[in-house]
Amino acid sequence: MSGDSASRGPVAVVGAGPVGLTAALVLARTGVPVTLLESRETLATESRASTFHPSTLDLLDELGVAAALRRQGRTVDRVQWRDLDGLVHAELDYSVLSGHTGHPYRLHVEQARLTPLLLAELHATGLADIRFGATVTGAEDGGDGVRLRTRDAAGRTTVTRHPYVLAADGSRSRLRELAGLPGTAEEYPDYALRVVTGTPLDELVPGLAALAYVRDARASFSALGMPDHWRLIFRIPRGTDRDAVLAPDAVRARVEQALPGAAGRAVRVADAHTYRLARFLLPRYRAGRVLFAGDAAHLTSTAGGLNMNCGLHDAVETGRALAAVLRGDAQGETALDAALERRRSVVETAVIPRSEARTAGLDRAAELPSRLASLRRTAEDPHAAADYLFKASLLDVAPRPLKGEAHADLVSQAHR
Image (cartoon, rainbow, N blue to C red; front, side, top):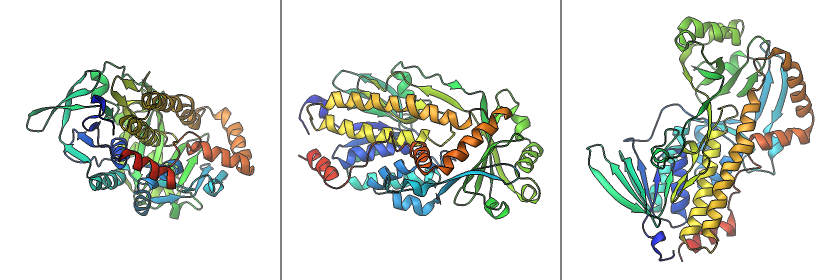
């Protein structure tokens, strides 16, 4: 690394979720010392994102964790659209992506299964100072570095200096607030109801794929098969009383409408909860030497499972670009700004439009026939099917994996 003041000391990564851990690991793997700060005492375990797309699995494979993650997840090789009566309107097989990715499938597994794998790899680099229970309370950018003030669980304050700070501290980012950047999200007209069941739905519903979209004038919802449970996700008009939606009898009635007959009656509801759907995009992903990634930089509709995957792509591309700056590459700062602007553009031009398109018109029964006809045409055309899944998997906008000589060269330059 170069010896100027901007390159001394570890980079601070704030947030030990999937995005922060991925960014920290990318940096450490290229020889950059990292201080990882997490306000929680341990890794988060609550149910959150659970979809990993082929483009993301390619990058996680480069980091050495994809195989272990797959062993804990459910491999999904097809996506299906059907109605309440069991008629399959269209089905796409992920095998059409063979040759475009090393992982021609989607993986369903809780993000909480990924974070311990990343943390173990980060420990193994020997270049990470990992601090749980460390809450950032202040950030002062001096032009050639950032002074971070943190408070531990006992109330003790520590001040550290870092050449750069990467904020991956979530949708309520404290660093975004400290930088004076906007943070108000725009809520969608709907919120989500997630019903969780341990009942094996694919044994009750003939031909049900582990990724199924039910599109019917009577009711529309998504069904996701996880390793040990299923999730049914419904969109509820904003303004509908949440307590009424979550009442056990109301949840039971909705499930029985979604899975008519014996199948609906056999479902055992393990949990039901709601969560908001909102969109947000920072006007820029940088405030001086503080950089933003993941939910700290953007939120999208959960449709298509794109937001976390995009955040992991942020972590990889930003981590690579920051490593180039710290090893003194001539175009380092310019390349870093270009990477940050590219990540923002991906959200604006690809992630948000594609996510919103998944659910557009669901509440307008008159539009369903034409939308379903379009899906059937896509499924019947191999080129159109491949293009649909290519874009649904973000393969056209994700960072490319570094393999072989390119990866070896990156690592060797970091240690010069």
